[in-house]
Picture (cartoon, rainbow, N blue to C red):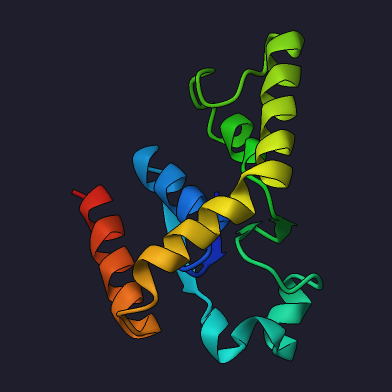
Amino acid sequence: MSKLKLYYDLMSQPSRALYMFVKLNRIPFEDKAVALRSGEHKQEAFTKINPVQLVPVIDDGGFVLTERHYLCNRYDLPEHWYPRKDIKAQAKVNEYLNWQHANTRMNCAMVFRHLTMPSRTCSDISSVVCCIMGSLAE
């Protein structure tokens, strides 16, 4: 089995969520940090990986995807992460995830930005996020 590649930037909430998910589940992956602040996601090399030019992206031996439910099946993770046997439970999870993405994600991102950005530079924030994420590896 080839090693999963994870393309992410820890300033991106979906990237942080996926990064924590693979760390918590001890899924081995090749670290592929993408510097959004410098526009790396708009470069031709990354656009070949994800034409939509967004992170996170997983590449599982050439199978490229931008969501994590696939990983629950691929690595046979416990049902509490994403129900696969109960289609009604799965539908309720999908319903909530769609609602959260459309209704709360941007507002929560703005709270995070307001609390962290005024007094800090992007590189300071990045180091704080990296420190927090690094503790997951322990």
